[in-house]
Length: 104
Image (cartoon, rainbow, N blue to C red; front, side, top):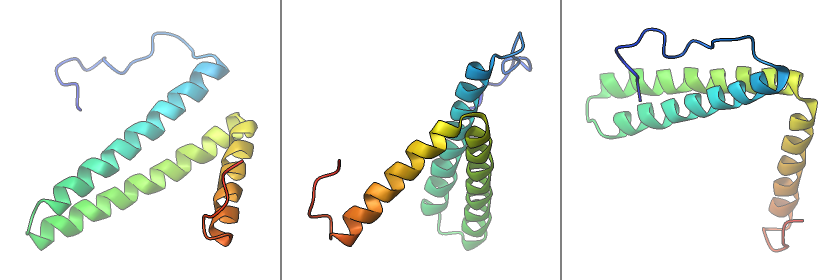
């Protein structure tokens, strides 16, 4: 949701520590995901194909932003990439076993 009225609402009053920057990027990722959900919800709720096309295109741009931010997060916090990869591999294994075995 947009916070209108105060042009300084998003300003950070100090230099962030590395840990604060990591958290800020996670918040940015969450914001991009929320934007995708919003654009797609609006696209799904209209019959105007022109509007659908534009909104889905914007949602796809937000997906690219998620990837860019995720890569920054991996650079700043390599263990984040390790956990993400472990999660991916767990699901790949589950898929290969037709989701019949419990996750570790």
